[in-house]
Image 1 (cartoon, rainbow, N blue to C red):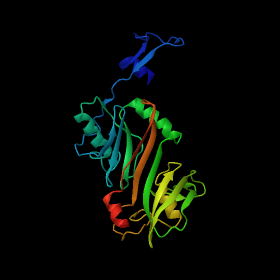
Image 2 (image 1 turned 90 degrees about the vertical axis):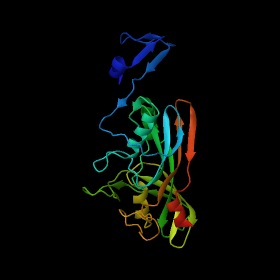
Image 3 (image 1 turned 30 degrees about the vertical axis):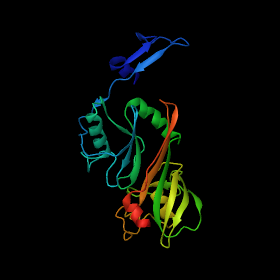
Image 4 (image 1 turned 60 degrees about the horizontal axis):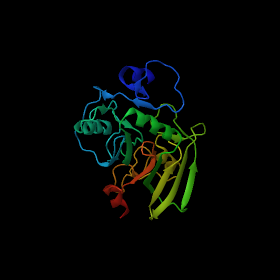
Length: 264
C-alpha cells in the first residue's frame, strides 16, 4: 500500500509532500491521502434497490433481504449485494467504487451487513473482525422445543472431504455459539444467538448438532413444511467501534415478515 500511496496518493509531512523514506520526528503532523479505488470493470453495476439503515463517509449498513447473494460468484456476477451497492455509490457520484463487505451473510440469511466504503475503513474493520470486536446477534427459529433458557455450544466445526456442508468434527476449528431462548412453542423455538467465532454456517451447524436444525434449512435437513422457504435466520443486531468518530455504532432491525408469520 505504501508504494501505491507514493505513486497515486499522498503522504504529507507538516503539509509538505514526502520526498524520501526518511525518519519522521516526534510530534510531526502526518497526513495520508489515499487514492480512490476506482472501478472494477469485472463487477457490473446493478441499479436494484438496497435498504440503507445507516451511512456516512466511511460506512454503509444495509438490511439484506433473504435470497440476495452477498458477493459475485460463478452463478451470479451481476446482481449481488456488492453489485447493488456499487450502483448505489455510482448514483451518489462516489469515486470509490469497490465496496468491501465486512460482515457477509449467506444468500438465504437476511439482516444487517456492514460495508466499508474505502480501503482504510476496510482495513480498520477487518482488524476488529479478526479480534472479535464486531458484535453480531441473530434471531433464529429452530425446530423442536429447547428446554433451557440459555446455552453455550462449544463444538469444533469443519468439512468432511469436499462436501459443501459443514459438520461438528473432532479435528474441526474451535467454534463457540451462545444462545438465549426468546419464545418457545410446541414444535419450534425462537432463539437469540451471538457468535463468538466466525465459522461458515456456524449457527446452522451447531443447532443441527443439538438436534434442532433451523426451520426451512434444506442443506441441514431442517423442517420444510413450517411456512418458510429458507433457513429461518436473521442478523438483527450489529455493533462496532467507529475509529473515525471514536464512538461505538449500534444498529438493529426487526424480524422480516416471513419469520414473523412463522411465530404468530
